[in-house]
Every structure is written in C-alpha cells, then in structure tokens.
Amino acid sequence: MTTHITTEQRVRDDLPQDGAARPGRAWALSGVAAGLGGFATTILSAEAGAAYVDGKVQEADGVIASLNGHVPQLITFHVVATLTVLALVPFGLGLHRRLRAGLDRDSLVPGTASFGILGTALVVLMGTVLNTEFIFGVAGDTPLAVPEAATVFNHWIATVPWVWGLTGLTGWALFRAWRQGAVRAWMGIAAGILGTLSLLLTVAPLQYMAGWTGSVMVVLVGLGFAFGDRGSR
Image 1 (cartoon, helix red, strand yellow):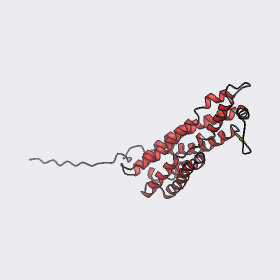
Image 2: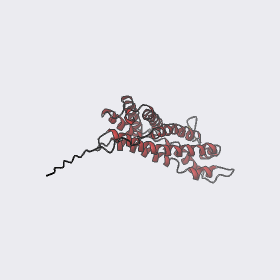
Image 3: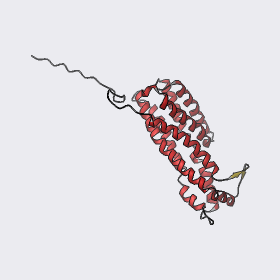
Image 4: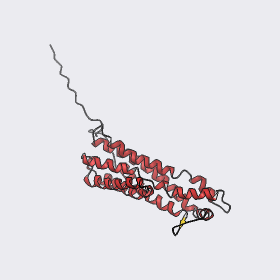
C-alpha cells in the first residue's frame, strides 16, 4: 500500500516572490512631479487674471481685459494642470499597491489613501474644463466672451484647481499606515499633520488653501517612497 502525503503552502500574492519583478520608483517620482505641478498650477492660475487688484474687486470689463493680456499664462496653466492630473493618477494607484503590500488585505487604508489622490486629480481636471472656451473667448481684439462670464471663469481657475482637500484623507491614511508599521515614522507623522491641515482648511471653508498643504504633502510622500522606502526593497 502506498501512502501519498500532500502539503500545500499558501503564499501571499500581494508580496513580491522570488524571480518576480519588484515595483520600481517611477510611481513615487510621479507624485513628486504632481506636487510640484500643484504649486505651479496655483501660481499660474493666480497670475492669469486680475479679479482683484490691491484687495478691491474689479469691474467685469477690467477682468476680461486682464485675461486678454494673459493668454500665454492661461495656456501654460492649462498644460501644467493637465500634466499634474496625469502625474497624480499613477501616484495614486502606486500608493494603493504599496500600502496593500504592507497591510492586511481587509484594511481600508490603501483604498482611502488612493481615493484622496485620485479624487484630487478629478478636482484639478475640473479646474481646467472651462479653459478652451474662455482662452479663445477672451483672446483677440474683439473678445467673444461676455465680461461677466469671464469674471466667473477668473474666479473658477483661481479656486477649483487649488482644492486639494481630499489629500487630507491620504495624509490620515498614511498616518494609520505608520501606526501599523507599514511606512516610516517621519512620513506618517508629516502626512498626518499636513493632511489634518488640508481637511481643516476644507471644512473652514478655506479649501483653496489646501492646494499648498496638499502639494507639500504629495511631494514629501513621493520623495519618501522614491528614495527612503524600506518596504519597496
């Protein structure tokens, strides 16, 4: 009589196996690019028109004249903002993969962190949706846009692309990831502080200021995962 003993070894499929390609750092570097793009987006959109001068609200005719004189800045703003969106997407997806590899499969942390970044990408994209209509609508000697509509557009681009409040969720998720030993302490603490500021600014409501705190956090986290992440080695 022959006896066969079968053993089954379960291997986690969310960790790199022998011979398997390990994730690179391109996704993390895309986060650095996205954060820098966030800074550039806010600066360019603020300089593209003048709804306010010396703290005073300008008349609609003055706003459209200002936009008319800043068409190159408007085009640059559109290009930079769109590239920022494209950089945020791989960063958000890569962040999900990295955190999922270091946490329990049932953890909500990876999804929350990724949602904060991908949601921000959608917000920045929405900040560009009126560009084509108004860049060409305010250009030339006889602008086609209505001055009052151009004024709304000026406020739109100087507010919506700055709303990085959802990155606050990413910050809190990274803080939780640190508490569970999945990321370095400095990253979890810095992300938690900056994420809290972004959320508070969003609730305040001063949500446009989260463009600064959110961009700083994305740059720091991207650099941390690209050059100082033990979990990806």
